[in-house]
Amino acid sequence: MSLKRKQMSIDLKTKQLILVEVEKGTLPKTKIAEKFGIPKSTLSTIIKNKDKIDEAVALGSTNSTKRLRKPMLEDVEKELLKWFKKARDSNIPLSGALVREKAKEICTSNGVEHMACSDGWLCI
Figure 1 (cartoon, helix red, strand yellow):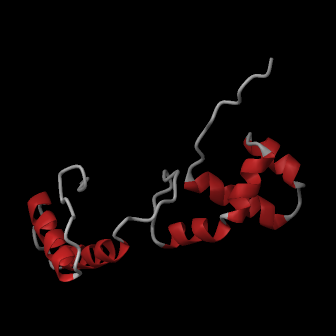
Figure 2: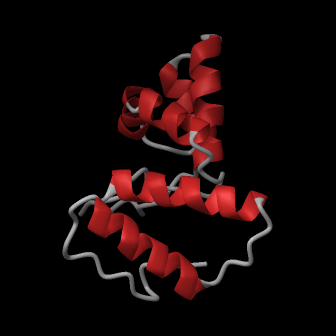
């Protein structure tokens, strides 16, 4: 009878620490996996996804981020974020309704017809 290993999520900060440890090269990968309490296969996956992890850090993902997912409408979200930062820098009061309206406007201008700018989509 084999016991199933409990699945766990590793946050971005821990993944960065693991990658730093691997880059140092002072410990074998098996020891690094043991040190962080992860299977060797998970360590291999983290190493394989190094570029994605670095990109997430560069884009400002929080340290509590566990999954690296790209938004479905990446261009729309980038444009909305650019507008949001500009409005915030100009001290324009922002509300959820205003951000949703701008998102709809950006979607329309980018030819996206079926974007539901619901409260669930906008998590402020």
